[in-house]
Every structure is written in structure tokens, then in C-alpha cells.
Length: 190
Ligand code: SF4
Image (cartoon, rainbow, N blue to C red; front, top):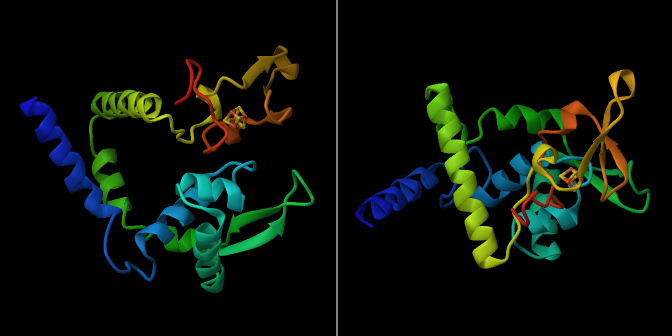
């Protein structure tokens, strides 16, 4: 138990880089969270609804955050390529540039500096902890296609491709690592 408490304290301390009062480089921690998510979200999740789900808030609060990002020229609304009645929230070049000053990058750089086996172990351990929390609290975290129960693989050679059974769309290689709020883990939620 003592070690668990020590680990909890370390996690709380590490959260200082993304949970803070006021603004850093002009954005609040929630605005940074939204910008970061939109830059990493796949085409099905760059929507106000998916953003609200990611931030665990309602659409009205998510819309206010999007309005701030739009006013700063960091995000634009475009008609969705998936559904013409919907809009897609796209990070602009300015948004991408600002992300280079994302406060969470300090933590990212420390993780990058770890040895590869330590980094893999940290990733797998944190993933297991989050899956346990998701199951216990009946909540859903976004995930990536490569770990999702809806991803199917078919064909061989030049015909080899991946498809999402939920959206009935092809998924190309570069989309595999983008975040999706519709993700469901292969062994249940998480
Ligand atoms: S396979 Fe899963 S993670 Fe990928 S787009 Fe479909 S629902 Fe989202």
C-alpha cells in the first residue's frame, strides 16, 4: 500500500504540466487539452460531440472552448467529409505551431528520454491501470484503431486493407494511431 501511495503522489506531481491555474502561452489547461485532442483525433472524432465526450463535459461548454480556439485562429470549422450535415474541427497551421509550446511537452520530453523498455513498460502499465478504471467507473477513454474491436483486416498483397466495422469505412495506416472517441477495447471497454 505504501508503494501505491508513493506512485499516486508521483502521478499527481506529474499532472502539474497539464493541470494548472490561469493560462500558459495564452491558453487554459482545458483549452490546451482540446487543442491537443483535435490535433490527434481521427476524422470521426474531430467533432464538437466527440470533443465534449473527450473533455467529459457538455456540448455547450465544449462549444465555448472551441469558440476561444477559433477566435485565436488555432482551429477552423469545415464541412465534414464524412457527413455533409456535420462540421469538422480542424487545427490550423497556427494551432500546430502553438502545439510546439504545449506545456505537456516538458513531460513528453522526460518520457522520450527513458530507455525504450522502460517507456514500453510505463505505457503498458498505465494502459492496464486506465482499463481497470474504465471498467470500474463505467467510462470510456478514447483509443486507437490498432487496439479497437471494430477494426477488421482483410485481403492480401495489394488488396490488403483495414476497415472500421462501426463506420464501415477504410482505415489507412496513418489513421491507425489517431485518437477515436468511439473506440472499444478488444476485451471490452477500454
Ligand atoms: S476501428 Fe475503432 S477506433 Fe478505429 S475508427 Fe473505428 S471505432 Fe474508431
